[in-house]
Length: 220
Image (cartoon, rainbow, N blue to C red):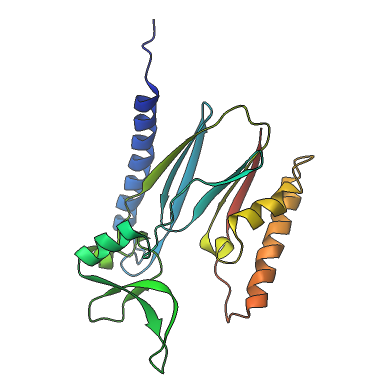
């Protein structure tokens, strides 16, 4: 007979594999010619296996889900305003604060700074890369979220970058996509979501538009 593994041991095994894959990515980055000292990327991966969703993320890309009629966020945003993230950075002599304009007024989101320097100014607290700032608590190490599914007949997943979530709430995103659930018209759903995000950015009249990247999956 095959041995029976407990749910916790399976979860630990999957987390271990996801961590190992990310660790290898970081190692290969360090051996590459890419400028990983002063630039970086978020990371978000999801595995759905045996009615369980496993999410591994670094930074502020996000995994959200519509579970029947319930909106859920399945990843943790790694932002400087998070108490745990703030504590780690400040314990390494990093500074949390907003940018200053030419008049000395604060503006924009909270960012991470090296003490006495105008760097790095990151609006997130974990990245793959940005190794020059590891000393002040910027880390590539991920967090994991495990969510058990039931017998839901409607599941919509969105994995996306912060350019999407900065201008649309989780509820707004999933409300847009739900209109295309019947017939599983996922390509039309993606077009509608991208148009909505771009429209919001234009309405805000920013000088630039943040990267908008996402994956949508209909399931159930």
